[in-house]
Image 1 (cartoon, rainbow, N blue to C red):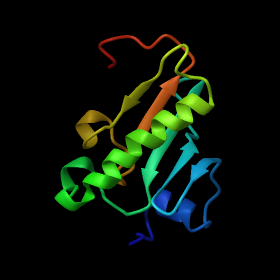
Image 2 (tube, rainbow, N blue to C red):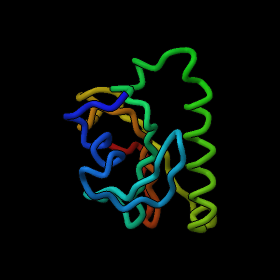
Image 3 (cartoon, rainbow, N blue to C red):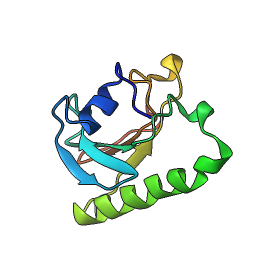
Length: 116
């Protein structure tokens, strides 16, 4: 179910623009409008889930699919050669700014550890 005030839901409904790299019935991969690396994509389920702690047990297939699609997009963009990072922020204290579950795929520069 879409939420009117959610930026990602508005992109899915074509009410806001978004550069979509991949899309199917369950999720979409879009380019981040405020990239933190040369490659910065967002893997987003179309089902509106505010954050990881609100995922239900029956969403396990969706979470698994997010990782599989991230892997496939990384392969397509040849990111597996140099490496990439997947990140999920949980809550404001961890840097979550859009409260619709999403995974960041970052690549194209040296990514340090610890990240923040």
